[in-house]
Image (cartoon, rainbow, N blue to C red; front, side):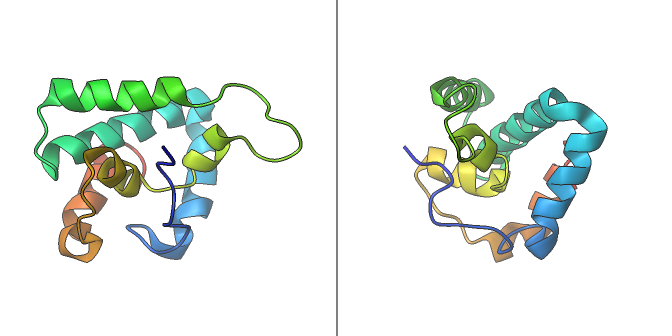
Length: 119
């Protein structure tokens, strides 16, 4: 499953500043802190916007996280590196199997990212 497939940068909650913002957050939190915040935001999106129970959301997030390749993957960036450049909104939509219209939920999603230290 390619959770980040088809969305690219600049089209979502943080728009064109997402990549820059993630770089700043990674610098202040460290990669482990960024990863924890990122996955917490994905889980919260599943609960708040896709109406999954928290335990089900946690299981889906954990399952995806465990399937990510670990460590260096040759010359290019690893899938793990690429996934953190995607917005949690799109990862949650992919896990839920439902593509919700971001514009409709953008203010609430931005608040969710703030609560998780990502905006």
